[in-house]
Image 1 (cartoon, rainbow, N blue to C red):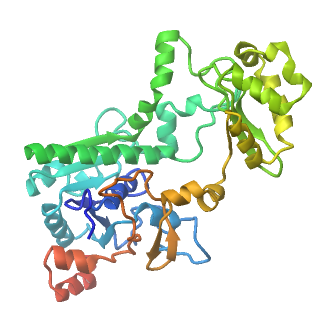
Image 2 (image 1 turned 90 degrees about the horizontal axis):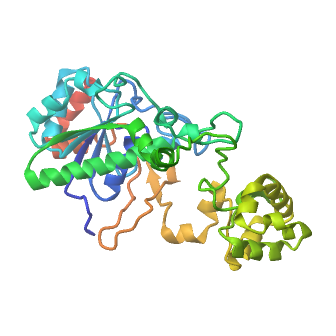
Length: 412
């Protein structure tokens, strides 16, 4: 077998959705054995994405939610009914042979089950326990619950996104789930490196709203140094250059329905090149000759460019502008990027896995390649309890008859 970067690690995983499941997904892609624990009584619905849309076809049920399948590739899946004492015994045995326990429940949930950090470290003194929730485990907001859009809003990001004289628009999709997952993966690895160096385990407390706030650096610096608030007259305009140095800088309509091109002119030389390509009298106006004039007249400038681009194919025009040294790109739909982009195909960003219920499905790869220990995604998301026999039998040493008895008793 090819070497893996994290093949020596085992993760006892309670994570769900994406803020948590995304973190352990990345570790699994680099070889860690991630054992995902689900609830047999509620058919795995600790994670609300199980059985939720979008769907591949007309089939419905807990095994057919595409988001869930995408977020849990590379993992093994078991069930434990934590309402029973025997399930808790089995969890203690699994923790004892794991390197880390990971979860993104609301604050205090695992502790109330009897598996807070003190209990986990009593089972395995060098265990790494990572909690990832909306507001962290301590502080005045610890009892609050959060989803990605809430983390964006409370973190301050929603405030800075929108159009002039309009309410904050936010980002739409729950990108804070991705961002939180990245931080969680880094935290797990950092704690494991410390453990391997010192022999010490530790509890890692994480807040997704604080992860959101960590992206506010430029806005905080601008206000601190220049006394400029994020929302001020004429600002923000999410399509325009936030630094106030580039114009035109925006998204413009092209021929066809809902087709767009992004164009950014960085200096006066690029503006001259663009005016030559446009070839219309309005481009020779003295008020547009330098960056200051173009920035002062962006409304007029954007309207004229938008009128001009509407007569062009987005891909053809982008190629022509790129040849002139102008930053331009066709705005890609997911289909364009996934199915029709040779760069994406060459990168291998969308591997196909064979799911036991859904059949072949494409999933997200990772936007990084390691020359010696690259990621591999060839294991589809497990169906509910698919790896009970392996985990309870091969890892914990139970006999087949005992495992079957656990099923009959509703323990697994």
